[in-house]
Every structure is written in C-alpha cells, then in structure tokens.
Image (tube, rainbow, N blue to C red; front, side, top):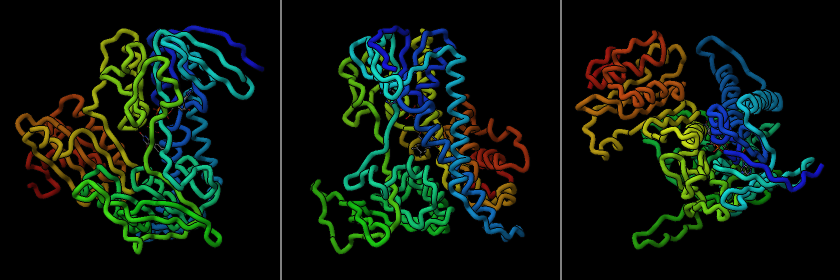
Length: 487
Ligand SMILES: Cc1cc2nc3c(=O)[nH]c(=O)nc-3n(C[C@H](O)[C@H](O)[C@H](O)COP(=O)(O)OP(=O)(O)OC[C@H]3O[C@@H](n4cnc5c(N)ncnc54)[C@H](O)[C@@H]3O)c2cc1C
C-alpha cells in the first residue's frame, strides 16, 4: 500500500519513541492533549531495544553464571555451561515484553502512533516518510512539537560499524556466539559494563582507553574497586592509547593503537613515539567511545531550531528550544545521556505544553553504572560542594563493616554522603557497592525533600541490609556511626 500525500493535524507531535518521547506522549495523553508519536524504528528507543534493558539483562545472566562458578568458598562447586544464543533469546523476550507494553500504554492514553521518519517542513509542519508496506509520505500540522530523537554511537576513523569484525554496543549485545577475544575501545560506562559481561562469558578482553583511567569524570575512590574487580576478571587495560585502524591477521584481526597525542605547553601536539604503537590480535573489536545526538536528519532549519556545534539542541529549564512551540528532550538535548533524565524532561515538556508551571531540576539527578561492583551517584561530590562555597561534612561507611555485604560475599566498596555543615542538608552521595543503583535512590529522595543527614541517620533501616550502610554513613557524618570508627 502507498500512503497518499494527506495532511492531518495534532496538538502535540512527538518525534521519537524512546524513554524521553514515549513518556512525554503518555503524560501529554494524561493531560488530555491530542498527541501523535512518530517512531521510525522500534517503540522504546535505544534504552529498551539496544541499551539499558538488554545490557542489564546480559549483566544479570553473566553475573549468575560467574557467581555460580566462583562460589567454592560457600561450598558450591559448579562449572556453568553458557549457551549464548539462548541467553540472547531470553534477553530479547524481556525486551519484547517491555516494548509491547510501551505500545499498549500509549494506546491506552489515546496517543496516536505513526510509523515513519519525521522531518520538519515548516514552522508548524512535519513530513512523515513511510517505508515498507506503508511507503510514501504524509504531512502533519502541529501546534507544538517535542523532538526526542535520541543519540547514536560515535564512529571513529578506521572503524566502520558495517564491517563485520567491528561492533557497536547494539551489535555486541546481539552476538549469538561468544568471541574468544574482544578489544573494547573506550573505558566509559558502556565499555566497562560490556567488558565485564564478555569477561564473565569467558572472552579475553582488552580495553584501550585514550585517557589515563577508566570511567572518566568519576572520582578515583569510586573507580578503584571497579578497576580491581576488572583486573581480577583478567581484563587487560592499555591507557593513553587511541585505536587507529584494524586489519585482517591470521584467522582474526589486529587492532592497532597509537599513544594518545598529549597537548604540549604551547598548545601543539607532542610527537608520537612509533615504537610504542600497540598491536592487539583479536576476533572482534567493540567501539564504545560515546554517543552523539541525532539532530542533523531533522531539517531543523525549516522550523528555526538551533543546535550547538555537537548537534545538541539547546533548551531552557522548561525543555523549550530557541523556538517557543518546539521542545527537545532526552539525549538529543544533551548530557547526561541517561534514560531517566530524558523521561523527566519528557514529562516536563508535556506539562509545560498543557499550561502547567513545571520546570526541570537536575539537582537530584542520579546516575548509575552497572559495573561489578556498581556505582551510584547523586548531587554534588565533596569537591563540587567545596567549589560551590559550602562548608561540608562528609560521612563514609565501608562495606567490609556491613553484615549484609559479608553475607553476600561482596565487601569492596563504600557509601559516602556529603552534607552542608551548618544546616546538615544532604548535598550529594557516591556509592560503590552491589545494588548501588538501588541504594542511591534514598539519597536522591533526601536531596529532593531537603532532608538532613540527621533525618537519614535517624530513619530506622531494616537489618541486615545494604541500606543500613547508608544510615551508618549519615551517622558517621555526625560523628556517631556504631559499626565503624568515626572521624
Ligand atoms: C549499551 C547502552 C547501555 C545503556 N545503559 C543505560 C542505563 O543503564 N541507564 C540509563 O539511564 N541509560 C542507559 N543508556 C542510555 C539510554 O539508552 C539513553 O539515554 C536513552 O535511550 C535516551 O532516550 P531518548 O528517548 O532520548 O532516545 P532514544 O532511546 O535513542 O530514542 C530515540 C528514538 O527516536 C527515533 N528517531 C530518531 N530520529 C527519528 C525521526 N526522524 N523520526 C522518527 N523517529 C526517529 C529512534 O528510532 C529512537 O527509537 C544506555 C545506552 C546504551 C547504548
């Protein structure tokens, strides 16, 4: 069937059905707006189909196998056999369940769903091109538009994702056999999460990172337990290297990396010492060097919306772009490129369009990295609070002093809480621990509510749990933790 050149109208046109766009659509539907949601690929976007959910499913499955095979101290002797194709099938089942749920929720909230690729054609007009059975295009007139087109993996020179041995994170999560060896370019959170997945599957993993440590932007004390665990898993690291090319070598490939060029004092670039060029033989190479916004495909000029030089659509605290009736949310609106940040922005955009006085507040925005152990952060670090002019107090509790951590066999890590000394308000927290992604929520709530460390310390926590360590860190900030020595 070919769809003719029809024109329809809508109050709110949302482009992209990832966690930013579909949440905006559902919220707009709840607010009785007439909403059309356009998606060119799959409901749920990167997060549900190729990102958060599949990666966490694979992390869970490989953790189970790894733990079962490494629990001799607990009297468990097992050597789990891994069927990767079956594991990937299970992961795909989880994804299908969630993406079909998104579609049902949208329909239940009176959101009109449209499959196709949207581009702007004027201040209040978009064109939707359909492929496959519904080939052709149609025009939509809109009162408001919300751009939620997300991001894509950055490609680096010499590594084309169309070449079979070269993988992006989406392709790496869909492999049906375990590679014997894998080079991962980039030690950011995606690279590090997938490094432990593959190491636990039995792959020889080598990580190449341009900078001098893993997880750029995170404090050293948070990274230390993660790096130690990665070393224990046999992951090989080369810091200060930039991957420059790959070529076929024997049965596999060889990845070539050069020392990362260091800036010289006069602003130039230091000479590369060619003797230090690194050559790593491997079966596959996964490039995970960050993501870039998808905005250049939208014909933003037609609607008058501006981007910065990275393609990020700039927005104000109400998710509005440089054009009043056009909003941008999620990865396309910039860092942090996290699903929950996009969903929050999507809800705000819908509420602003409905005339509510909502605004975005990033103060209590959490972040989690699902490495082994996990990292969770929210609010300010100690040095950020100092830079912001606060007199701070800090409370810390080591996991080795937690009864629950010992029963889990997971004692590497700590909980750290940063608070304002004069009033005691919680300003931030950093956690490295199993389930840090869950534990951090309590401290996000504390920031959101304007709670003090005393409030956290005097909240009775269930025993024995990891969350008791949050209470003890708060007590430590006040100088009276029970199960650790106080500063
Ligand atoms: C491996 C991996 C693991 C991750 N893990 C986490 C995690 O644990 N926690 C977390 O918070 N974040 C995680 N992320 C990041 C998270 O996936 C993104 O932040 C999130 O998906 C951004 O949501 P979004 O709605 O802005 O964009 P997306 O999810 O990218 O959705 C955008 C949608 O827009 C569609 N689209 C684009 N252009 C058009 C067009 N012109 N017309 C119609 N449709 C269009 C796309 O097809 C896509 O479906 C991970 C990402 C990856 C890659």
